[in-house]
Length: 325
Ligand SMILES: Nc1ncnc2c1ncn2[C@@H]1O[C@H](COP(=O)(O)OP(=O)(O)OP(=O)(O)O)[C@@H](O)[C@H]1O
Ligand SMILES: [Mg+2]
Image (cartoon, rainbow, N blue to C red; front, side, top):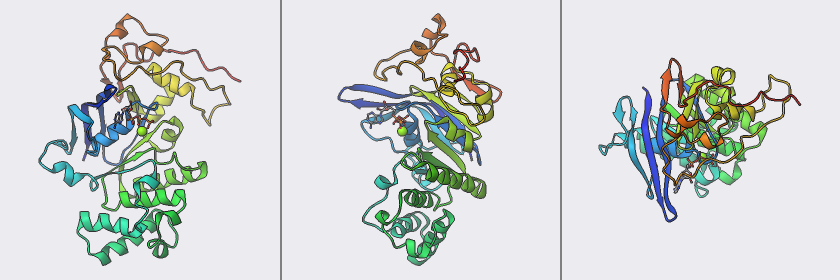
């Protein structure tokens, strides 16, 4: 039960020109594993999730690459994807208010998933909806099931979304910034809930965030995205100890750590290159302190043991040590 993405290219034809959003994404998730995907705004995290869920629509197009589940392609037109999306692989979105229907009760929305995908009767679905609300920590689920989204707080709406996404007992749950719309305490509760579900249901989770701190708490492995590609992937412990890619090293310099004395946070200067220009080199080279001539050529993503890295100079310290302060 492995989800594998290979050399995925996605482009959007916009009025302003062609946006090469994904330029060769490679990743895989094993059963029970929690993979974090981190990267700056616009690096392609959401587009990757949308592609896995079959949600790339015009003006977007998957131009190359493969997405397979259990070795079978989700992209072929034989309907395999349709039988997997929303069931074996499901997704929760950043903002539950735009994903929930304001005109339907929470229960009706969960029941819709259950009757459509699992062929339950209305009565069975309602019972299961109550159980699901309880499972995601909503108290008084029998009363809550008949309420509308506006009667729920932000955190409860996100819980309801999670209930909906696990309704069909998925094997993989993709969570795209599931906590950014919530305040800090509620964020922590939602992340705890995801961790609980992960161990209880044996789910694989792909957690998308731009915050390495969030990843540290929940994930076993992390993939770092930059400009439409994965530039580094390794275990969370290892990435905090030995970040290989200069971009990852830079990200870590700008992430506060609880286990270290307060240090000044340093950001990476510059901005990512435009996704409209075709560029054959390493996308990070203009911001990279150790870039050299070799970097005009795109470094391939190389696997060495448990580490995947796309850099001509992996592991070389790119930035000066953080200053205490
Ligand atoms: N429907 C679309 N039409 C045109 N361009 C798009 C579309 N969707 C995404 N893009 C472009 O694809 C690139 C990657 O976007 P994506 O949403 O995946 O970024 P992200 O990493 O999720 O960023 P964020 O952290 O802000 O959510 C961006 O340059 C974005 O403008
Ligand atoms: Mg996004």
